[in-house]
Length: 217
Image (tube, rainbow, N blue to C red; front, side):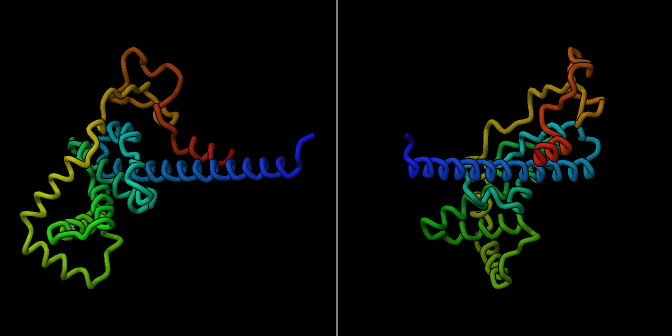
């Protein structure tokens, strides 16, 4: 006969696992929604790059290794928006974004004191990545001071961190489009002739309607 206390413990563990899994999925769907919003905004700014921006969905996902900061909405949105802008203008998507670098410098500051150039870089990155979330006003004179005295060093640090802290595999290539975006027939420049747009409707990523349906299940 099963031990009632053991069964209760197992039931509690199962409930905790289910709750944890649901919470994680909720975060994933939320992040997918932010990505769809940022892609839609980028397409409005660059309608001529609609196809590339649509297929940049997997390119703009946050990097988990950068810590919990990449779960914050305004941080994630800034990261996504910068990458989408690069896609739109044909820029290199491999270097770290301002949001990613800001998290990296912030992590270093928790371990060792930042020198003046590094502190100046942090301020520069924050103001660049998160203009809608400014630091306290008392920090503004510090940024001016750092830029005036250490601009060249800050420039060098930013270039080095962008290259070393980037993702060499973050590139938009080998796109396989079947000629359908969000269930609608489109004349996408990435649609292969082999598919001809007549096979099963699919864009390679869930659309906004599909995200909503998954949330409501």
